[in-house]
View (tube, rainbow, N blue to C red):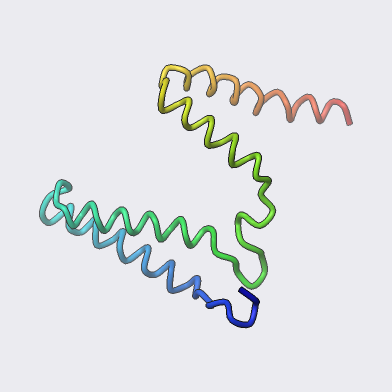
Length: 112
């Protein structure tokens, strides 16, 4: 598809739909029950539309995935698969992530 015939998506409209669906889902949960079919459906659609809104390009910035390295996607998918298959491994991963998140900035500042 070329730029001229690519459909334009209105980011504001996507955000309004996402917020509307989430608020409708919350309202149904308060009035009726969180176990209601429509409550779950509206919340899921609202979350999906929110994810679309985050990923859409705007006038001042490219799409969220425009500069993403494909190997990051493979790595994140593999990490999620390992965590789903073996949930106990999540704790060591979190400890390593926190330690790296604290130590790496301190080490890089001291090297400068």
